[in-house]
Length: 61
Ligand SMILES: [Zn+2]
Image 1 (cartoon, rainbow, N blue to C red):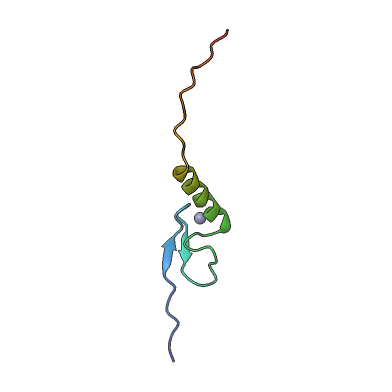
Image 2: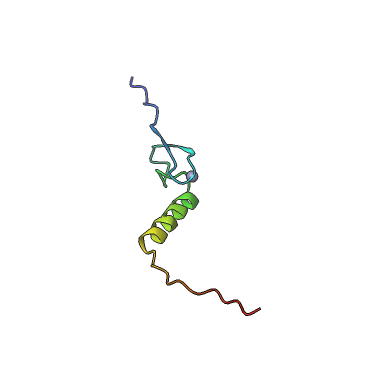
């Protein structure tokens, strides 16, 4: 009889929550779809970051 090995635990890159590395963890290494989306959003923001032209502050007061 083989004992099922304890699943490897990874930390969710978004929130640091421990996530068991098993097929049930559909969003691994993230703990949830929410965290995965957060990370994807961060990636996209980093990837497609445009150099923003400096806009002079309007001081019409
Ligand atoms: Zn998470």
